Amino acid sequence: MNKKGFIFDLDGVIVDTAKYHFLAWKKLANDLGIDFTEEENEQLKGVSRVKSLEKILAWGNKTLSEKEFKAQMAKKNEDYLGHIAKMDESEILPDVPRVLNCLSKNNQPISLGSASKNARTILERVNLKEKFNAIVDGNDVTKAKPDPEVFLIASKLLNVEPEDCIVFEDSVAGVEAANVANMTSIGIGSEDVLGHAKYVFKDFTEISEDFIEKLINE
Image (cartoon, rainbow, N blue to C red; front, side, top):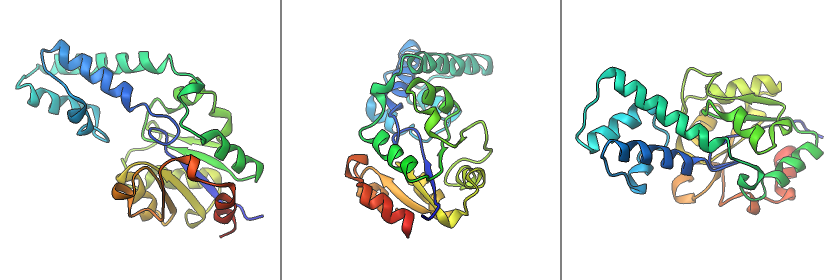
């Protein structure tokens, strides 16, 4: 059987931690006397912590000293980590374990390729860490997606050429990074948003074992 490399993003692909970012940013904004909606939270997806806080302050027409700015960022992260600490297997998105098990059964190497610096903690909390042959997260990279660095490192760790890697992503930047790396991109989400991926599925419930075997044998 062929050997391919399967690389998974974390947030929005394996688990959905966006809700915890929202709760932590909302608490921070409200504590500063700023209203914060889910629509505004959408504008923070894929945006760094520094830029996110700058946007929130601009919306609320507030300014902070550099010291207070750093303190608020640390507070937000602490709040977010408090939510992460309570995660369990129930937070895994539908049919992700089935797809991971299918890949393992077919002796295919699996890596994580995530910008999250909390990726290892999250995988441990949801009891999936042992499913991965390699983990590349925000602590291992210097360039954010759409730069392909995270996926190229994963490819190297799996000892599989980039053109033989398949990437599961839920963001435009992530799909773009996979395409730039000359990998097969699979979008998880809406075709309207992720149309430049080679394949797009609403979620893993739509991915059959036949399709996975087709990917392996391509």
